[in-house]
Image (cartoon, rainbow, N blue to C red; front, top):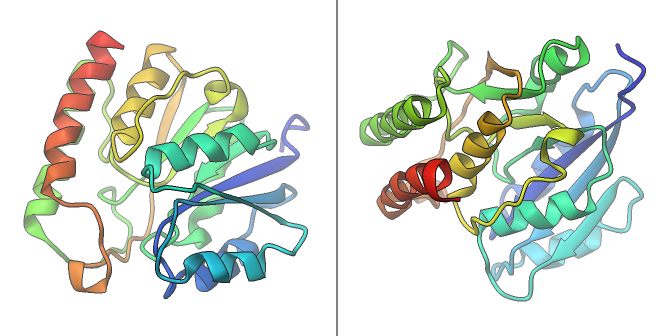
Length: 235
């Protein structure tokens, strides 16, 4: 491992996840990051279901930094707050539900540790074990990824993935503006514009349906179409 990497910051935006937040923190703590020390940064985006109380109880430990938004601003805004406080050499975005498995951290960070990559995306569609779920969500993801690839000149298989990992230098000066799920195409477009070395790896994926708490819907997909064009041509 290159001596330049000492710490990894795990960035966790949180909104109304009482059923999963303690378990995901347990899994993040248990995840193998080799010789990298973990810094866990949680941003509670004005949860209303008791999540805030759970986080306040957990946050007394030394490996966690907790920040809160007084009003709900969206995933993108929560990620920006995480980035403001992250000090790690490598930054990794982790959702607060249990769809994405921290056991995949070794394969996500390896291309960066090896000096081959600046950015790594974890793809739900590249061969890992995944729960079989909603066809139209799958098609929407593939369409958004295709359009993003065309405009950014990339060949990703999953632009909308939660698992995005970066060297700190790649994102510390990016001017991010998307408050909600537009953060996914925004990060992709702005990182591609800097010609960073992208890698992609398969991950395991245990998707939720709406009865289990899934939040993203068709309106977010329509908005993502606009964001793909906006952040490629107008921002």
